[in-house]
Image (cartoon, rainbow, N blue to C red; front, side, top):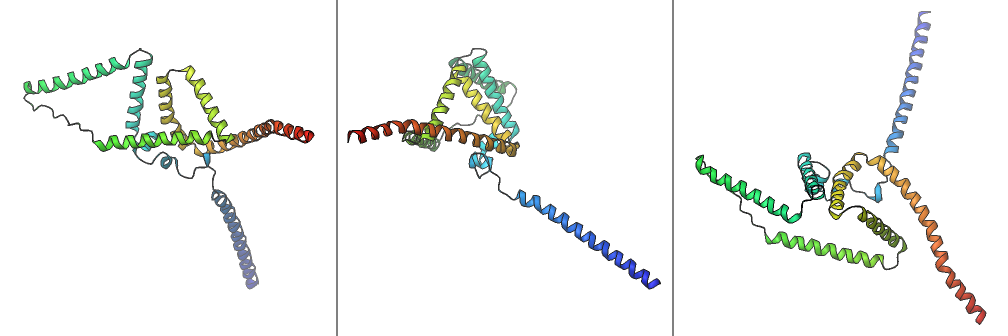
Length: 250
Protein backbone atom coordinates (compact mmCIF):
# COMPACT_ATOMS: atom_id res chain seq x y z
CA UNK A 1 0.00 0.00 0.00
CA UNK A 2 2.78 2.41 0.86
CA UNK A 3 4.59 1.67 -2.38
CA UNK A 4 1.46 2.22 -4.46
CA UNK A 5 0.80 5.57 -2.75
CA UNK A 6 4.40 6.64 -3.36
CA UNK A 7 4.08 5.71 -7.05
CA UNK A 8 0.87 7.72 -7.31
CA UNK A 9 2.55 10.76 -5.68
CA UNK A 10 5.49 10.48 -8.05
CA UNK A 11 3.16 10.33 -11.06
CA UNK A 12 1.30 13.40 -9.80
CA UNK A 13 4.58 15.27 -9.38
CA UNK A 14 5.62 14.28 -12.92
CA UNK A 15 2.31 15.54 -14.32
CA UNK A 16 2.73 18.84 -12.47
CA UNK A 17 6.26 19.20 -13.90
CA UNK A 18 4.96 18.53 -17.42
CA UNK A 19 2.19 21.09 -17.04
CA UNK A 20 4.71 23.64 -15.73
CA UNK A 21 7.03 23.00 -18.67
CA UNK A 22 4.16 23.34 -21.13
CA UNK A 23 3.03 26.64 -19.64
CA UNK A 24 6.59 27.99 -19.60
CA UNK A 25 7.15 27.01 -23.24
CA UNK A 26 3.89 28.69 -24.26
CA UNK A 27 4.84 31.83 -22.36
CA UNK A 28 8.23 31.81 -24.05
CA UNK A 29 6.57 31.52 -27.45
CA UNK A 30 4.28 34.42 -26.53
CA UNK A 31 7.31 36.46 -25.51
CA UNK A 32 8.99 35.68 -28.79
CA UNK A 33 6.06 37.03 -30.81
CA UNK A 34 6.43 40.66 -29.81
CA UNK A 35 10.18 40.42 -30.26
CA UNK A 36 9.65 39.20 -33.81
CA UNK A 37 7.10 41.96 -34.24
CA UNK A 38 9.57 44.52 -32.93
CA UNK A 39 12.26 43.14 -35.19
CA UNK A 40 10.32 44.36 -38.20
CA UNK A 41 11.75 47.42 -39.78
CA UNK A 42 9.89 50.59 -38.97
CA UNK A 43 9.08 53.03 -41.73
CA UNK A 44 10.56 56.41 -40.96
CA UNK A 45 9.48 59.78 -42.26
CA UNK A 46 10.50 60.45 -45.88
CA UNK A 47 12.11 57.01 -46.03
CA UNK A 48 15.16 58.00 -44.00
CA UNK A 49 17.45 55.32 -42.58
CA UNK A 50 19.78 57.41 -40.41
CA UNK A 51 18.93 58.82 -36.97
CA UNK A 52 17.91 62.44 -36.75
CA UNK A 53 21.27 63.47 -35.24
CA UNK A 54 23.21 62.03 -38.19
CA UNK A 55 20.70 63.54 -40.62
CA UNK A 56 21.42 67.01 -39.23
CA UNK A 57 25.16 66.59 -39.78
CA UNK A 58 26.19 64.86 -36.57
CA UNK A 59 28.42 67.73 -35.43
CA UNK A 60 28.14 70.67 -33.07
CA UNK A 61 25.31 72.18 -35.07
CA UNK A 62 23.27 69.01 -34.61
CA UNK A 63 24.05 69.06 -30.88
CA UNK A 64 22.77 72.65 -30.65
CA UNK A 65 19.59 71.94 -32.61
CA UNK A 66 18.83 68.81 -30.58
CA UNK A 67 19.62 70.57 -27.28
CA UNK A 68 22.53 68.31 -26.30
CA UNK A 69 24.02 71.41 -24.65
CA UNK A 70 20.96 72.97 -23.08
CA UNK A 71 22.69 76.10 -21.77
CA UNK A 72 24.21 77.07 -25.12
CA UNK A 73 21.06 76.26 -27.09
CA UNK A 74 18.91 78.17 -24.62
CA UNK A 75 21.22 81.20 -24.68
CA UNK A 76 21.15 81.29 -28.50
CA UNK A 77 17.37 81.07 -28.53
CA UNK A 78 17.06 83.80 -25.90
CA UNK A 79 19.47 86.05 -27.83
CA UNK A 80 17.51 85.61 -31.08
CA UNK A 81 14.27 86.34 -29.21
CA UNK A 82 15.72 89.55 -27.69
CA UNK A 83 16.91 90.75 -31.12
CA UNK A 84 13.50 90.02 -32.62
CA UNK A 85 11.76 91.93 -29.83
CA UNK A 86 14.09 94.91 -30.29
CA UNK A 87 13.52 95.15 -34.03
CA UNK A 88 9.83 94.23 -34.25
CA UNK A 89 8.20 95.49 -31.06
CA UNK A 90 10.42 98.41 -30.02
CA UNK A 91 11.07 99.47 -33.62
CA UNK A 92 14.86 99.39 -33.38
CA UNK A 93 16.84 99.69 -36.64
CA UNK A 94 19.88 97.72 -37.71
CA UNK A 95 22.46 100.51 -38.01
CA UNK A 96 21.71 102.10 -34.58
CA UNK A 97 21.76 98.64 -33.03
CA UNK A 98 25.26 97.94 -34.43
CA UNK A 99 26.55 101.38 -33.39
CA UNK A 100 25.13 101.17 -29.87
CA UNK A 101 26.50 97.65 -29.41
CA UNK A 102 29.97 98.80 -30.45
CA UNK A 103 29.74 101.87 -28.18
CA UNK A 104 28.78 99.70 -25.21
CA UNK A 105 31.54 97.18 -25.90
CA UNK A 106 34.22 99.87 -26.33
CA UNK A 107 33.06 101.70 -23.16
CA UNK A 108 33.23 98.53 -21.07
CA UNK A 109 36.68 97.64 -22.40
CA UNK A 110 37.98 101.23 -21.95
CA UNK A 111 36.72 101.49 -18.35
CA UNK A 112 38.09 98.07 -17.56
CA UNK A 113 41.57 98.87 -18.87
CA UNK A 114 41.59 102.39 -17.33
CA UNK A 115 40.49 101.29 -13.88
CA UNK A 116 43.15 98.59 -13.75
CA UNK A 117 45.88 101.16 -12.99
CA UNK A 118 43.93 102.65 -10.07
CA UNK A 119 43.23 99.25 -8.53
CA UNK A 120 46.89 98.21 -8.94
CA UNK A 121 46.05 95.36 -11.26
CA UNK A 122 47.36 94.41 -14.64
CA UNK A 123 45.26 95.60 -17.58
CA UNK A 124 43.05 93.03 -19.25
CA UNK A 125 44.53 90.98 -22.04
CA UNK A 126 42.24 91.18 -25.03
CA UNK A 127 42.46 88.27 -27.45
CA UNK A 128 43.91 88.92 -30.87
CA UNK A 129 41.21 88.43 -33.48
CA UNK A 130 42.61 87.13 -36.73
CA UNK A 131 40.17 85.58 -39.16
CA UNK A 132 41.96 82.96 -41.29
CA UNK A 133 41.66 82.96 -45.04
CA UNK A 134 40.68 79.29 -45.16
CA UNK A 135 37.44 80.01 -43.31
CA UNK A 136 36.29 82.46 -45.98
CA UNK A 137 37.33 80.06 -48.74
CA UNK A 138 35.31 77.25 -47.16
CA UNK A 139 32.27 79.52 -46.79
CA UNK A 140 32.58 80.62 -50.42
CA UNK A 141 32.93 76.99 -51.52
CA UNK A 142 29.80 75.99 -49.59
CA UNK A 143 27.81 78.94 -50.98
CA UNK A 144 28.93 78.14 -54.54
CA UNK A 145 27.97 74.48 -54.10
CA UNK A 146 24.54 75.34 -52.70
CA UNK A 147 23.86 77.82 -55.52
CA UNK A 148 24.82 75.22 -58.13
CA UNK A 149 22.53 72.70 -56.44
CA UNK A 150 19.69 75.24 -56.46
CA UNK A 151 20.16 75.89 -60.19
CA UNK A 152 20.32 72.15 -60.89
CA UNK A 153 17.13 71.59 -58.88
CA UNK A 154 15.39 74.39 -60.78
CA UNK A 155 16.33 72.85 -64.13
CA UNK A 156 15.28 69.39 -62.93
CA UNK A 157 11.86 70.63 -61.84
CA UNK A 158 11.40 72.53 -65.10
CA UNK A 159 12.36 69.48 -67.17
CA UNK A 160 8.81 68.05 -67.12
CA UNK A 161 8.34 65.90 -63.98
CA UNK A 162 4.74 66.64 -62.97
CA UNK A 163 4.98 65.43 -59.37
CA UNK A 164 8.06 67.51 -58.49
CA UNK A 165 6.60 70.47 -60.39
CA UNK A 166 3.40 70.40 -58.31
CA UNK A 167 5.39 70.04 -55.08
CA UNK A 168 7.60 73.05 -55.81
CA UNK A 169 4.72 75.20 -57.04
CA UNK A 170 2.69 74.34 -53.93
CA UNK A 171 5.62 75.11 -51.62
CA UNK A 172 6.33 78.47 -53.29
CA UNK A 173 2.65 79.38 -53.22
CA UNK A 174 2.41 78.60 -49.49
CA UNK A 175 5.62 80.58 -48.84
CA UNK A 176 4.20 83.58 -50.72
CA UNK A 177 1.00 83.46 -48.63
CA UNK A 178 2.96 83.22 -45.38
CA UNK A 179 5.25 86.04 -46.54
CA UNK A 180 2.28 88.38 -46.78
CA UNK A 181 1.42 87.75 -43.14
CA UNK A 182 4.81 88.54 -41.57
CA UNK A 183 7.86 90.67 -42.18
CA UNK A 184 11.12 89.10 -43.29
CA UNK A 185 12.66 89.32 -39.79
CA UNK A 186 9.61 87.64 -38.24
CA UNK A 187 9.75 84.97 -40.90
CA UNK A 188 13.44 84.31 -40.06
CA UNK A 189 12.62 84.24 -36.35
CA UNK A 190 9.84 81.70 -36.91
CA UNK A 191 12.23 79.59 -38.98
CA UNK A 192 14.82 79.65 -36.17
CA UNK A 193 12.16 78.71 -33.62
CA UNK A 194 11.05 75.79 -35.79
CA UNK A 195 14.64 74.62 -36.19
CA UNK A 196 15.15 74.64 -32.42
CA UNK A 197 11.82 72.96 -31.54
CA UNK A 198 10.64 70.62 -34.33
CA UNK A 199 13.69 68.28 -34.45
CA UNK A 200 13.71 67.88 -30.65
CA UNK A 201 10.00 67.09 -30.52
CA UNK A 202 10.33 64.74 -33.48
CA UNK A 203 13.20 62.89 -31.83
CA UNK A 204 11.12 62.53 -28.66
CA UNK A 205 7.88 61.39 -30.36
CA UNK A 206 9.41 59.77 -33.42
CA UNK A 207 7.23 56.64 -33.55
CA UNK A 208 3.93 58.51 -33.28
CA UNK A 209 4.93 61.11 -35.88
CA UNK A 210 6.11 58.47 -38.35
CA UNK A 211 2.86 56.52 -38.03
CA UNK A 212 0.72 59.64 -38.53
CA UNK A 213 2.88 60.88 -41.40
CA UNK A 214 2.62 57.53 -43.19
CA UNK A 215 -1.17 57.76 -43.15
CA UNK A 216 -1.08 61.34 -44.44
CA UNK A 217 1.34 60.42 -47.25
CA UNK A 218 -0.91 57.55 -48.34
CA UNK A 219 -3.88 59.93 -48.58
CA UNK A 220 -1.83 62.51 -50.49
CA UNK A 221 -0.67 59.86 -52.96
CA UNK A 222 -4.29 58.82 -53.55
CA UNK A 223 -5.35 62.39 -54.28
CA UNK A 224 -2.32 62.88 -56.50
CA UNK A 225 -3.19 59.74 -58.48
CA UNK A 226 -6.70 61.10 -59.12
CA UNK A 227 -5.29 64.50 -60.14
CA UNK A 228 -2.73 62.85 -62.40
CA UNK A 229 -5.46 60.87 -64.20
CA UNK A 230 -7.50 64.05 -64.70
CA UNK A 231 -4.49 65.91 -66.11
CA UNK A 232 -3.71 63.01 -68.42
CA UNK A 233 -7.26 63.06 -69.75
CA UNK A 234 -7.14 66.82 -70.26
CA UNK A 235 -3.78 66.66 -72.04
CA UNK A 236 -4.92 63.64 -74.07
CA UNK A 237 -8.09 65.21 -75.50
CA UNK A 238 -6.40 67.49 -78.06
CA UNK A 239 -4.29 64.63 -79.36
CA UNK A 240 -7.34 62.38 -79.74
CA UNK A 241 -9.19 65.13 -81.57
CA UNK A 242 -6.24 65.63 -83.88
CA UNK A 243 -6.12 61.97 -84.65
CA UNK A 244 -9.83 61.95 -85.45
CA UNK A 245 -9.54 64.97 -87.73
CA UNK A 246 -6.53 63.44 -89.46
CA UNK A 247 -8.40 60.16 -90.00
CA UNK A 248 -11.45 62.01 -91.44
CA UNK A 249 -9.30 64.12 -93.72
CA UNK A 250 -7.46 61.09 -95.03
